[in-house]
Image (tube, rainbow, N blue to C red; front, side, top):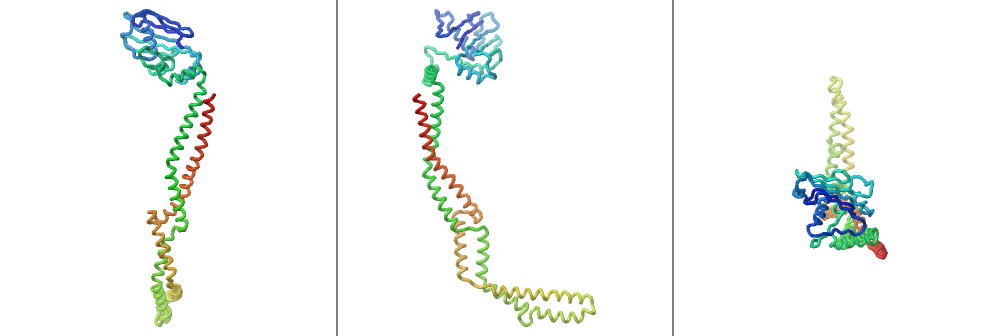
Amino acid sequence: MLRELSVRNLALIEDVRVELSEGFCAWTGETGAGKSLLLGALGLLLGERSSIDLIRAGADELYVAGRFELVRPELRAAIEAILPQPLEEPELILSRRLHRSGRSQVHVNDAPVSIGFIRQLGELLVDVHGQRESYSLLQPAYQLELLDAFGKLTDLRRQYQALAERVRALRRLHRELAEQQQQRQRELSLIRFEREELDAAKLHPDELVELTRERDRLIHAQSLRQFTALAADRLYDADGSIVEQLGRLLKEAETWSSLDSKIAEVTQRLETIVPEIEDLADTCRDLSERFDTDPERLEEIEKRLQLLRKLEAKYRKPLAELIAYRDTLDQQEARLQQQEESLSSLESQIAEVFAELRSVANK
């Protein structure tokens, strides 16, 4: 509430101080008495544009000051919210000086501030209404705010607004989840189908390489058996085998080894080679018995390989990535299922908040 207005050197005004008491106050007078100048002084005090033409002739500066009493606690709280420090007294003193040089000084409780800052304070302190001008009093929202303040309903109104915003937010979220529900159901069905398909396939990381190698062994089983049997014959079993030839060489070498140390060394090396060749022949003999054609196993492997390649082509992922993709399906399902549960939960939340909203509205 404006309690005092002081004006010096404004146009025709040399020095005027106006005091206002509680209740309704009115400035009256004939045309030209200075009522508009006082309103202009108040506008300057609240941050309106100034001009050195407003300075009274013969004066060096224009000075305007106003003392505002902050009666309402909510107004004081709003003022203190933008001030650098809390108020010691429930009043605010604004002043403004305009020098003929064009320099302007603005103070709030003797502390210098900017024009923008005092303009921000002015929006909270004063509302001016003119006969043919549109101001905040004409705005329905402001009228409602004044009516609620008069009825001491500000706290209830804020509580109602908070609940109303909560309801709107919940409804927006519910609408978004409801609009996505059909797509979400399709995604859930696809995820569950893919998981069942991949689980049924029982994938293993190195399976494709191992099966390919086993299939190739089965395809070439006869050739592998022939090779290993022939190798065993040539190494040991057949007449004139390598072991037999090495035996004859070893005997001859033993005959001459006493005559030369190098021959003796050759003899020793031949003695070590013969057991290795015999062992190698045994290995080839065993392998020749192991390699066997198995049409049923080959057919089983071909079907398995066909399934793995079909899955790789369908999901456009190699086997290792396909296994990793399977591990993500559970997380995807949990996320979508949580959204479904949230949709049901939101309906009850909206009902509860809306009931609370009606309760506040009935107070």
